Length: 212
Image (cartoon, rainbow, N blue to C red; front, side, top):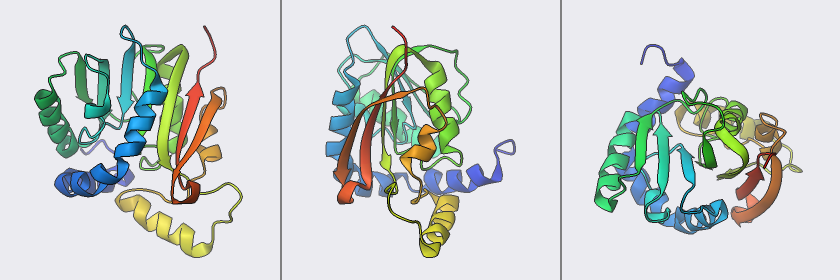
């Protein structure tokens, strides 16, 4: 833990402790979004998936049966819950590892699809998370981001910025714009942008990495 930046450590302390509450609150309200996101991945049977920010594994029941791939998260508390869920579901071809989304210990061009649920506004450096996801995606890969984004056209007031600074140190930022996240990997083509809830605050963005 000592090698993890302080901004990440405070985040980890929260997520390590709130697993049961997170599942109870976030699970039911995010079910539709997770269904939509997994459908947008359009995974073929022979393709591999990277799930960045697997958390407690709420997405695992929505993945195709027999899916091959890897889920990563930095919170050991969340990963323990994800491992239990994985065993219950019977997913022998899907691995779980502790890993920083901002510095993925994975080779370039390794995955056919990358799914980033509620992670680019949680990590201190959201653009870097997207850049790392793009790096490990194969040419032509699909990347799906589900998260809360501040509307591009709406100013961020001082109270909003202050609240986001406080919440960001604990759990998540609430004032990040998708354009700011996309700046981390501007070569990714936006091929879909769906408003899911709260007047477009929650969005499902589908991207494609150039190449065959």
